[in-house]
Length: 138
Image (cartoon, rainbow, N blue to C red; front, side, top):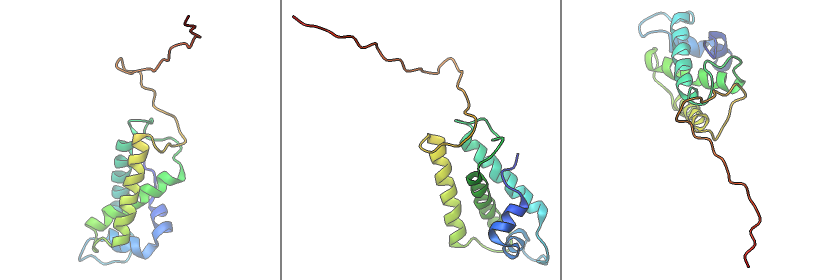
């Protein structure tokens, strides 16, 4: 499941930019290359799932807006690597911010609103504390 659509990219970054970064060098820049955009979104969604899989059921059935935003930033970066233009600093910064946020989700310092992946493996450790009693020393 993709966490964004081509329309999400266009609404966030503008049609002209998406045309420019989705069109291979030497091709006319007259329309969004939907196939390239869809591939980039699929790749970005797969990358996101690789971060989330440790803590959440993937794909996330009802992705929060921040997941769509991260997917768009990653897809935009991937398109810049293959399109007719080179990656600008702001594109790289947005990509790195998305990856940083995903690492925080992966390590548990940030959580998603969604279904947690229950760990049912035999090596799963469950913490149990001792009952506290009052001890009297004479």
